[in-house]
Image (cartoon, rainbow, N blue to C red; front, side):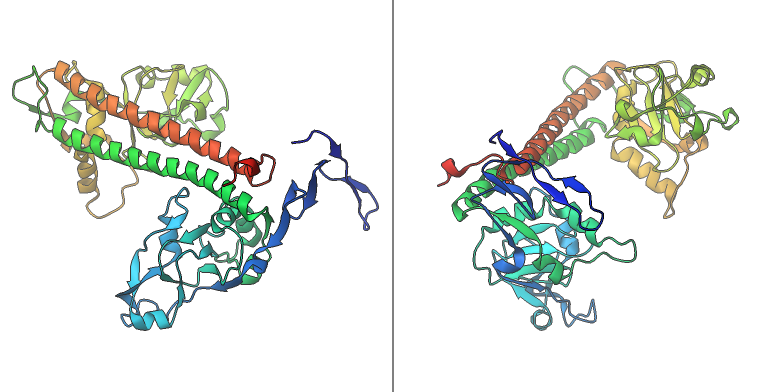
Amino acid sequence: MNSETVEVREVSPRYGFTAEKPAVPVGYKQTEVGIIPEDWDCKILGDLGQVVRGGSPRPAGSPKYFNGSYIPWLTVASLTNIPKSQQVVRSTLSMLTELGSKHSRILNEQTLIISNSGATLGVAKILGIRCCANDGIAAIINQNYGNRSFLAHFINTRTKDLHDKVATGNGQPNLNTTSIKTIAVPFPSEKEQRAIATALSDVDALLEELDRLIAKKRDIKQATMQQLLTGQIRLPGFEGEWKLLNIANNSTLKARIGWQGLTTKEYLNSGHYGLITGTDFNGGKIVWEGCHFVEKDRYDQDVNIQLKNNDVLITKDGTIGKAAYIENLPFPATLNSGVFIIRPLNDSYEPKYFYYVLMSRFFTEFLNKLAAGSTISHLYQKDFLGFEFPAPPSRKEQLAIATILSDIDAEIEELVKRRAKTATLKKAMMQELLTGRTRLVNYCI
């Protein structure tokens, strides 16, 4: 961007003071969408075509209209299942009957749509199918000009603003067609719009590919766990009959007992002695960066819950049954009252193997049986009396199994990190390209 700027000042007629606006670089101009290149226009969506809402047959759920086979039925709920990186709607959750389609609105492929209600309010997509849409979805039909992909990318940078604009706190927020018509968008040439849309869509394609790889790797992990944790497949060089271990008989389970009276008022934002709570669990690990801290006397108070490497933790309050394995402990840490610490008695099993047991269907099924159709809000020590799990006879084999699963976890974590970096790159690209701060006009084809 040209570093030469023009300072803009604005006088408030009501209060009489002079307010500064952001400096506008030479070759750029201030518009309703912010500072854009002088050769770009600023338009509103109502200029581009007819803004309409979908329609929902009534009564809802009537077999005359719903669960048919005539035409796909697009709802706000359908949109929530589509990843942010997937710009094109390729399928829906259900279908309408032919009669149902006559009480809705049929939209053609390549139509630009915007969710106007619910959690996805302000999210823009492009239809890759001919379908009917419910009244929670708006569309631009008879669109005369404007690259749909470019417009969808830009509208999605305004999603939070649109949601905040209509979220009054009373009932379901709703974005009406009048509001949608007045949404301002930057408007470079069609050639430059296409180049920008292509660049951003290429990043979206990479994000989708990473999502597929992550999902595939997670499926592989689940299948591998099923095979290795049940002995369906034995690792080379190991033999001997597997045994059932009871967690209560072969472990110590410790937690912060009630009389210690730790309260949230004692949670510190910084310090030397970490405090692990159930909210610090994420994907089998502790998010150390988000931990609270306590004073030294609280850490010293109970040696039984001072964390060590190779400890296994389980949440026992709130969202119960989340597990974490402790390795590379970054600082001394203790527990609040919502977490169990589990350690093997007499080296009866390998802790990391046991952690993967807790991440498998064995523990899920145990919790489901414990609930027996009700909601469990607390796990007690006595609840573990009935939990048994299969284990190889040697800890060496247990460790070998845990290492294989840990290697898969490392691969998944690397993919997740790569995806996060790519998403950050896309955000930066959107800020640059959709404002014209970085131009692709020389690369347009």
